[in-house]
Length: 462
Image 1 (cartoon, helix red, strand yellow):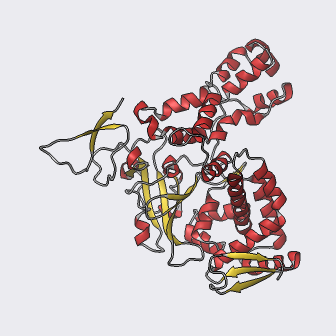
Image 2 (tube, helix red, strand yellow):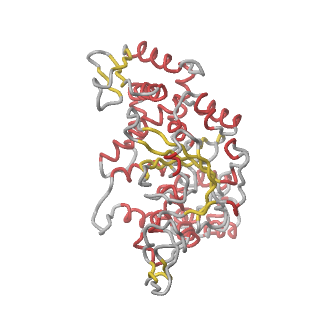
Image 3 (cartoon, rainbow, N blue to C red):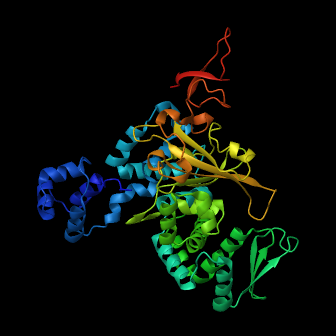
């Protein structure tokens, strides 16, 4: 997969003004023509690697400043914020947002900061879970240093297709003098695991399946051996609320554990070799479907990228309890609720079965042809029968033609199931599945006729 061209005109223009240079003078120092620099500053030409190196050599310049839009999640992060019902009457489309972000990234970042710190009535507010998710989004859920260290540790432990649980248990015993003990449910009624330093034990609930036991052991290794590295990343995040930092750190602990169970290079080779065959990958790495789904969103190593998957977990009410976008453009997965026309909801009634569906958005623009989505119901960890969710992963259909789960499935745009971002933000007319009217639209009432949809509407209010 090729990265998008780097267009960083505003950052280059600010640097030139900071140095008090004309375009001709700066172009001379960069060994390019003034006209080319002018096109770069206007975002009509990408910044080449040679120009980036010249900027670093000639000026006190941090190349990361050219990706400042990533701090707000790029175009999709901005679109998610503008999808708020308070802006529904403005009819702002993605093309307009793209222009805003590319020409005025700092203004876009300022808007995002104000939006993120304002509650529904405009009061100062920051939800710690949202703040943590935004930080994960800023990293695109890829932490290269943790991947590298997990891979090195997996090699050191010689983790392979054998009994991974035994290798993890031995690591805890030899390195940390900790034994692993499985305890009855009544002893750990409300816990999945517990570290008892007095007894020198890692205690696991008997209700955990093999994959969850392995993950809990890998999680303990992450917390015991990589605490400093993980805390360093967590401390680098700008949070106003320490609860958000704690949630972010918890995500990083789990990230390392998953990377230990599914080492990057070996996992990516298996993905390529099997056509990302999800059931095969589950068994090959002895992981659960949910653990596998998490890992698929992280494959963004420079020079060794996987496909850009997204992952969500939803409950029966259609609420997303987890949402990891990675490098995906599937903005419908970043909403608070899902569309009932998406077969993720059907997966609840098809326990354990992998449900596959090709979907696209009603307002999908050019280059957004749809996504191949794969869903399966899962039980809450350590609570079989007490809690049930659906985990869904998806990738752009144009990239999915060779995937195992796409075999025999038509990926022609005309065959996609059209879905929306949830009823109150969806403007699809005549949908019989609609539960609520869309915000910002005038409702129509006809005394002589009753339509198939409970709500009929017209132009935007305003």
